[in-house]
Image 1 (tube, rainbow, N blue to C red):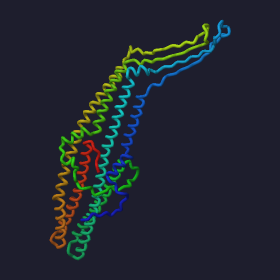
Image 2: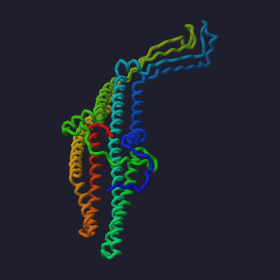
Image 3: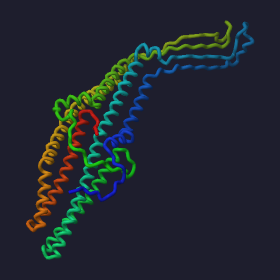
Image 4: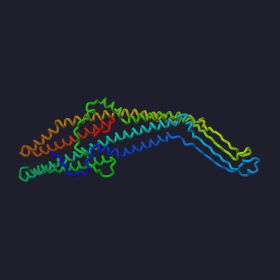
Length: 419
């Protein structure tokens, strides 16, 4: 039977490639991950910055002092002072705290960038599945419309035979009931398609009613060559080499290790170097002759040596190592589940294409021929029609499952779905 589309398309066909492009441009999770990268870039800049020097100056006046009574020239009742401090810059460079801070922030930035790429990978899998679901829903709608058209034709034929006295009114009622049930199925399929489009549109960052139609039917189930002959162990090896979440977890561990080193290095006190200049007059008899001085400021770690910061950094490192082990275990689970789903879908599609579809179509063809010649009952015809319709729907769902499982397998091994 030929598929029929009773409704005009509401927009240009949306391919999977176009859907993935929209997702990268407008997807909410992608935009959130991009913002996180910008924040980490700011943290890296701040961690690498040199402290600004501290400059201070002041002036004052000495009351009840007459500089003219000074036996020597150069006396003054106005005080001037100034100072300069490196804010611990030189000591920080020598001790290496700034270098460690920059390394911690750099590793965190690398981890955040990998997390963004992993977010795109995961979201791409969700978009691919939603796209497949929408394509399947469109196919099921067309199949339901075909079934409704066939049921209407059968009902019309039975109604004519009833009025001619060839069949009973019960047969006419059964045929009309089957037609109405088929129309109900069309309405349900139309609703499912609308829901699938809305779900896909949300993942693409659409605001409001989706303005697209998904390309369908789905392509023939032909596995990419690098997956067709691959074993589960080979796919797991690829996943560990290509998964961005595993690489991000490793970077997070490196950042935490550097944070522990920084916390331990921070036990060394921050030494600040300074210079000052003061004068109130210039002669030997001046209240404060021009005076320059150097200063060294060193906090003495008597009561606290940063034990809390070290313990916190060590706990964060332990948590990141656990997270790394969890990601590695999750990769094994993802690959195993996706591989099993794909092999199951492959088996079902192969059985459908090799035997089931042809037999269901042939059965319907024979029963229709027999019914027109009075050799088969209406119940047999309606049963054959229902079987054919359900087989067509099951096949389209199996094809959708096959593509969803393939895209999930690609995602599990660290790749984005390839249209």
